[in-house]
Image 1 (cartoon, one colour):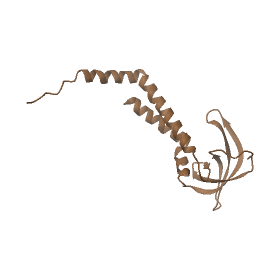
Image 2: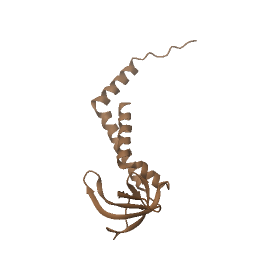
Image 3: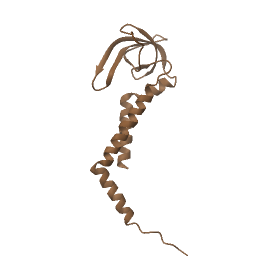
Length: 147
């Protein structure tokens, strides 16, 4: 049980860190439609691959700065380029249609959560729980049969 709860907790943390909810909202067609104005690339060894950072300009005129474009941009796009985008919030913009970012985030979340759960299961904490559970099972009395 501890391993399962550890895995679920790890999945929740990873899902929140990756921004899974906004990715699903964008894929579902939620969020403001507008234009992502490409600014610069930001590379970090902590976040994985480099991402484009820029400004989102909604059709209604609202502007959000320091927005990360989640997804791939066409080759040759650079600073100052304007790309149609959807903005569900959380400073992340996505392609208007066909964003599959959520699927990669979900796979990453499931993999890391499963790995954490498995490692906890292998740890002394998990071993102690397995031993206690099997000992309780061995000492259980069989049900009485009544005729």
